[in-house]
Amino acid sequence: MEEAQLLDGRLVAEEIHKETREAVQRLRRKGILPCVVFIRVGNHPPSELYVRMKQKKAQEVGIQSEVIALPEDVTQQEVLESLDRLNQDPSIHGILVQLPLPKHLSEKKIALAIDPRKDIDGFHPLNLGKMLLGEKDCFYPCTPLGIQELLKRYQIETEGKEVVILGRSNIVGKPLAALFLQKSKYANATVTVVHSLSQNIKEHCQKADILVAALGKAHFVTKDFVKPKAVVVDVGVSRIADPSSPQGFKIAGDVDFAEIKKIASWITPNPGGVGPMTIAMLLANTVKAAELSLGHPF
Ligand SMILES: NC(=O)C1=CN([C@@H]2O[C@H](COP(=O)(O)OP(=O)(O)OC[C@H]3O[C@@H](n4cnc5c(N)ncnc54)[C@H](OP(=O)(O)O)[C@@H]3O)[C@@H](O)[C@H]2O)C=CC1
Ligand SMILES: Nc1nc(=O)c2c([nH]1)NC[C@@H]1CN(c3ccc(C(=O)N[C@@H](CCC(=O)O)C(=O)O)cc3)C=[N+]21
Ligand SMILES: [Mg+2]
Image (cartoon, rainbow, N blue to C red; front, side, top):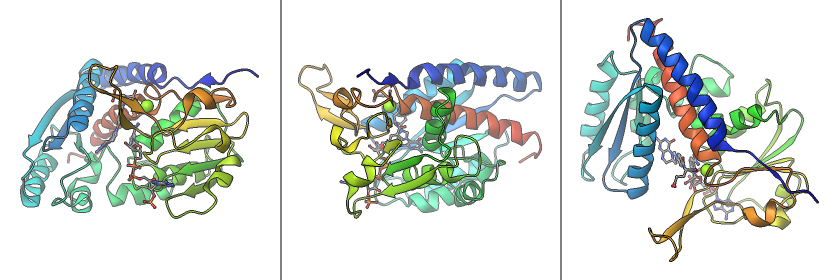
């Protein structure tokens, strides 16, 4: 049997970055310089890496960016004050608070404190609610949006298909389910979401025409979970020990790529799949925030 074709997130993300750069140039000609602020709390090496990657890409497409690194012991009040200041500043179009946060900070309160018009992550309840209703003048979470966009660019139809999502987090699983349920192109799917309390997980997965793994458990999805010719999307990121790498670890996805590529029709590499798409959608959302700001002066 033929091997699966790659859903090359790096390649597609570069295409999107090119479009974003053009949109940034159009905005600049109108006197608007899109600007995003990344807030990072404490010392968490993966978050530091991700924020650096986001900053580098922002720079490449001409989006101004700033990083605010807050100490581990910053108070909730201080975070809210920073957000308030950024909300008031008309030169800033997008605000992102990198997750995870230290335990003493409330993700929920912080998401609520970001002006929904600057919430490029799409984590504010107003944006999540609007997404559920299929509204367009709002922000959708970047990872679900990136997965849908990746399928779209490869013209992989979802209409009427069985989509099975492993994981029900507020940032990946749940919003992705809402997106694939929408009455629109590259949606219109039949969606099943499984989680840690689900029964018969493997049997659910075996029904999937499109299987999305977002649990964060290295190589959880093995060959026996996958229907031949299925499309497999690997969101999970785990760091596993690898003495042969200079850092001492390597990235492992939720999917056993080497085995599953033998039976799937399409598969995302990981790294190089969903991750770069997430960043591409984040910058696309920043441009959208700047464009929408033309219609309101903040
Ligand atoms: N590439 C990218 O752009 C991104 C990657 N990620 C990565 O994706 C993964 C998921 O992220 P996130 O959604 O935030 O993670 P969470 O930890 O918030 O959610 C994990 C979900 O998986 C479910 N789950 C965990 N273990 C099992 C199991 N054994 N069987 C069935 N379900 C299980 C949990 O169930 P329950 O709800 O019952 O606890 C939960 O719903 C992580 O590895 C993260 O690093 C995340 C965001 C972006
Ligand atoms: N407010 C907030 N918004 C987020 O969007 C957000 C977050 N917090 N916290 C963490 C998760 C995770 N996430 C990733 C983004 C890109 C890659 C990515 O580009 N990964 C590279 C590999 C990078 C590496 O080597 O580790 C790849 O998949 O090819 C991965 C993960 C965004 N997240
Ligand atoms: Mg990836």
